[in-house]
Length: 529
Image (cartoon, rainbow, N blue to C red; front, top):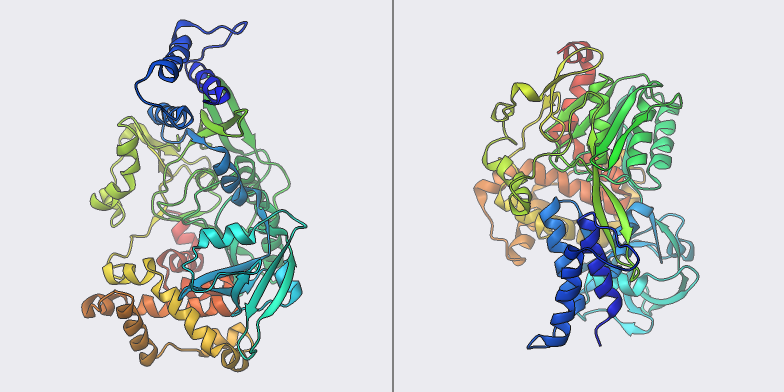
């Protein structure tokens, strides 16, 4: 029997999209058409039909016709979607990788249940709940399903450790495990600090404030905030982060929709970093909340925006829950920067065209040259303090353009990264040499300054790549050799320490980061432009 609940929900949803309100259990003619249609399909259609699946598809199709960011999310998808924004999940607390069909612990999460029990980096998970998981073709998704679980529940894990013949058994009590949004925070120079933010979640502001406070105590007066690739998150977190850098009573962003009156978000006097130089790095992967922060900082001339034009996601979604646990996130308003620029890029050509827009930026040359980007006079705005020209039309256009490095990011390099070859090679190397590396470089600074990727290691990497079906391309490798070397060293550092150490090494090859450092050294000349 078809679930009547989801059938009615689909009909109610159809009515809601058309702004139809059910009155005394009745629908208007338009809403009734959907009820009649589903009833006819259920009772008269030639074949049996899964109406649950059909209603899901209908809802998704209708939302796609509205805008690119109104979405339907099934009950099973809701929890997975919320985890990164909630800032935690419940599990055993390890980061892992699957190498040669074996689960290898990259590192136990600090303060998590696995670390407390003594599980170490390099340990191999052989059994979970007495079930063999080594050499079985297990996937990352399957591992997560076995290791995650409600806080307080117990899962038995059997570990194989180098130098120990027998398996080591751990009864791990699952707990809340933090999902960090600050990937890196470190001191660049005597005055400059760097913070990389990957998302805007429930814990973001606490993490950023802790990072800022720590850097200030270390004598930092200037901040590079890296929002490249940051797809956004909570609006209130973006507002609070902007507030940290702005003086009181500054408009940060406002929202407006046909059925949503204008709502303004204003800065308070609580900013903990209202003075000092500020550079924000963005790129085509920076969206939504990232664009709110970058737009506010740019419009108030508080800092310099560096990189490439951001994604252009300026539609506000509000969640509406269905009785079966699924939800829709329906667009109800648009974001505007303090100068009145609409952040959202156009989507009038339909969903498919919209989804290809980033690829078109590359083919049209926008990622390579600022001159390939053309704005009309109607999209010109002026910043609120220095009256500098800025442009609307979708996304935040940086003050200083940094082109995409097509020479280094060639097919061979992309194969190295996309196939996980550099990551796996680094993991194998650290696994074999962990004790020696820790003994030789007990502190990260020693590793950073003295450890070198030699020609033999690169030769071994090329051989490993060939074994993983990535044929050697001498010209491509020559072009990307410097970048491959940096990323390999950074990956080894991450496996030995954390992602913060990864970025401290990786950023030496990042054009946006290096431009930010240059800007700080010549602040007055850049900021007057």
